[in-house]
Amino acid sequence: MDRQIQHPQRVFRLDLEKYGLSHLDGRNILGIDESDLNMFLDALAEDDISLQIPGVFSPDHIREILSRSECRMCGACCVPNPMNPNSPGVELFEDELRIIADKTGMDYEALLEQTTEGKNQDSIYPLNELIGTRLLPLPCPFYIEENKECRIYSTRPLVCTIYPIVFGENDEYVEIKVNCEYGKEVAKGALKALKEKNPDFILKI
Image 1 (cartoon, rainbow, N blue to C red):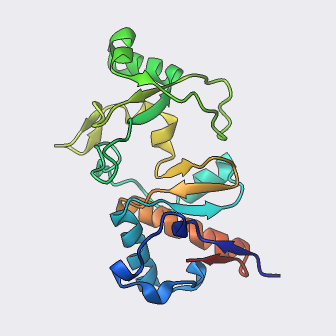
Image 2 (cartoon, rainbow, N blue to C red):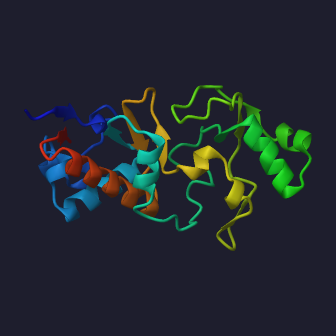
Image 3 (cartoon, rainbow, N blue to C red):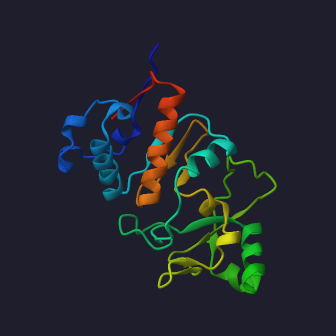
């Protein structure tokens, strides 16, 4: 039996007509052609809407999806998004902040002062030993835009390691940011994996 899922982009009211995509209304995103998929992802990016992929995602599953592409170090996730100017910044665990301070030789307390208290929400990623989060405002002080380089790439926090994947409110789906080419390729890979796992899956636009 086909399993029908209403695609979450409707929740955010993506204006398909605005982007000349009215013909995709009600279509199964897993069945549209490459050209339409590219235009759909571009429209999501333009309105800063994440693509939501249903399913239970284990760490191995996350790694497999991310392995389908490679970050270009474009810095899109390291600077403020004009579509989301009120974003509080990057949320990282306090222990990760200590590791960054050690890596860079910065004083931990001085680095801590640059952050604000986070949501302290549990992550479905199995890092239960990490507690307490802080918000590091953007632009990220560790991204060197001139060289497109991250000063802490080898010890970057979890949220950066798994980007463009971000977790939703539960473990029944993940959100994929498609604001960069890397994100779009990861999204395509996730959709392909979903279709391969269940060819009859219906994910309506």
